[in-house]
Amino acid sequence: METHMRRTILAFAVLMTGSAAAADADQQFYIMGDPGVMTCATLSTKLNDEQAGVMLGTWIGGYVTALNRTMPETYNVLGGVQLGDFFNDVIAACAASPESRVEAAVYVAIDKAMATKQTKAP
Image 1 (spheres, rainbow, N blue to C red):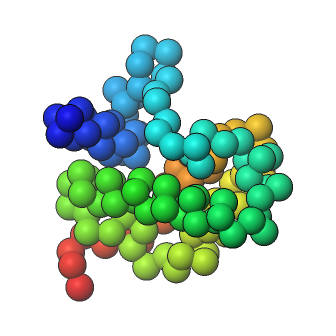
Image 2 (tube, rainbow, N blue to C red):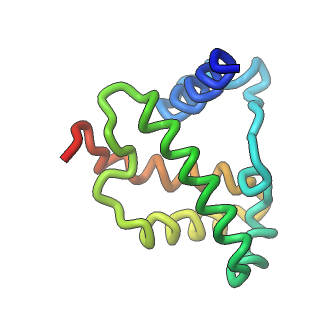
């Protein structure tokens, strides 16, 4: 199981660095967890649902932690971006593409945050 988990985490890291090798030949990859698979249109109906918010926050925390652990020269992929601003970027990406999966919107927000990535622990 540990080897499988490392491969999954590595796939996330490769995805974030822009390599096409992170997906299958059709550019498809498995998204683990309901919050990531949810469409942005569905998320927009749950913005006031506390339980959905906790689930999404936990899912994003795992996604970011995996990237922090596996990306070279990375302490915090979100760097100096405040969490509120990060979530606003996710919501804005969802608003721009309601048919997309939440994972894609999170990817857009993380990609934006990469400009302030921390490479060393404070």
